[in-house]
Length: 283
Image 1 (cartoon, rainbow, N blue to C red):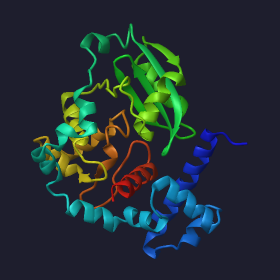
Image 2 (image 1 turned 30 degrees about the vertical axis):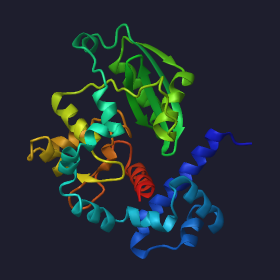
Image 3 (image 1 turned 90 degrees about the horizontal axis):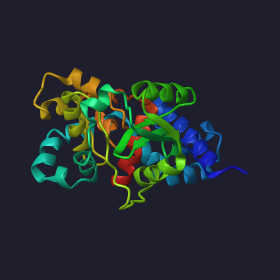
C-alpha cells in the first residue's frame, strides 16, 4: 500500500507530465480525454486528480498556461508594483511580513561559514514535487526544489556554503515549516523568518519579489524599474536566479516582458505548475 508521500510523488509526476503535454500542444487545445490518455488515466480519474491538485479543471488550467494568458497578465500589470507600494499592500501581505522579520547573518557568521550554527534540514514532498528545506534557530536558510538527480548535489552545495555548521537531518523539526508554507497550517510558535544572504542589490530584488501579490505576474523590466535601476533587467534576472528560498520569495511570478515564461532555477515545468496553481486559487 502506498504511503501518503509516495502518492504525492505519483500525483505530481502525473501533473507534471500533463503540464508538459499541455504546453507542447496548447495551440491545438487538446481535449480532456487526450490529456488523460497521455498520462495513462481514465478521463474521470484524471479530471478528479487534476481538480483536487489545482482546484480547477484541466481545461481552465490550460488557459492559465498559454502564452496569450501570460501576455494578457503582463499587459494589465504595467503599474502592478507601483500600485502595490501606493496601496500599502506590501505592509500587510504575508510574504512581505516574512521579509521584514528576517535576520540576516552577521559578517562574522558569513566569514566563519556557519561556525556555531546548528542547521536542521529535511527532504519533503510538496504539491510541486520534493524539496529540501534547511532551518536554523533564526530562520529558513534554504528551500530548494529537487529532481531525482539533484538531491545529493544540493545537499553537498549547502554543506560547502556552511562548512563549519553542525548539520542535522531531522524532518520532525522541518515538517512544521513545510505544513505552514504549502498547506496553510499556521503556527504562532513558528514564525516564518528567513535568514538571507546576498548582496545589497540581490536583497533589493528579493524584496521587490515579495511585493508581488499572490496570483499576479510582473516582468523583469518592471522589477528593475521599481528598484530604481531601469537598465538592470539582466542583472535582475541574475539576482532572481540566485534566490535560494523558493516559493516564499516568489521568483516564479516574474515573466519575460514579451510574454514568455522566462527561466526558473528549479525547472520551467515546475514554474508553470506553481503559476497555474496560484492563478487557479486566486481566480
